[in-house]
Image 1 (cartoon, rainbow, N blue to C red):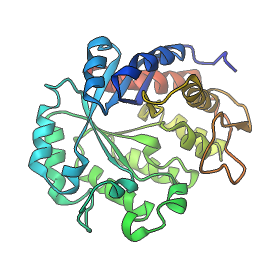
Image 2: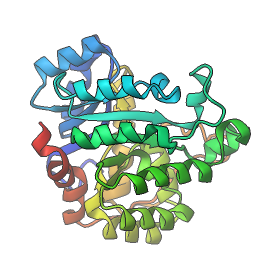
Image 3: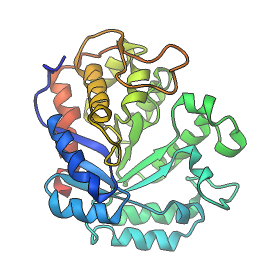
Image 4: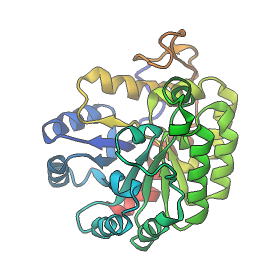
Length: 312
């Protein structure tokens, strides 16, 4: 299956830049899989400075906004950070509100919500600076069954999604990239995701992560393929790969899984790495969607160029 249908360049719209020492290795491996450009979400100042100097032609950098400041409504500090973003060499911003964020931040107000009106000036600053926001809210349905059973702490998935929808509704001029298929690749959630894409033209979604996306979209090939065809201009290829992870197998498994999903009509292909969510219930298997070449071209490359090409 190495003779893939799509032979053009690939833009990975969701990768993580960490320690300096690992970045060259990441780029070398990615080159083998046709990655010609990518969003690098920055976790390390040294890694950022190195990648910016050595691979400026390849990366568009995303700056993490302070989760601690947002969680405590330190709005002025967040706005100051946003105002410095472009001068520091970043082209977009990132926030992470997977429900377990509450495990890492102390003294979070019990009633914190991302749609709290006190955060409106933050989104206004993003609009004023013409900065896209890559915003992670919610996680797989399986996580809510396995890890987030305390709804009083983590909320339900529906509650998490409603908060994000309220943000999208109130800030129509901010460009949002919502990773992980809008946190809604589960077949029963695609109708809601479809409604979002119809209502909010400022929203795009990415296909990270390979495990979650392959597991869920493979459950109903007809419904999933119909969705991909309809919204092919609103979807970016992404992997969620990190430069700190080691080994060719780590990269190969994630790239191979998605390419089987998007490009082939294979059935019941075992996910080429372990899925912790299904390892005790039979594992995860991929059923290919066999997308047309024109759609693959959009998802792998053209959509990212339309959205972010001018930011390089």
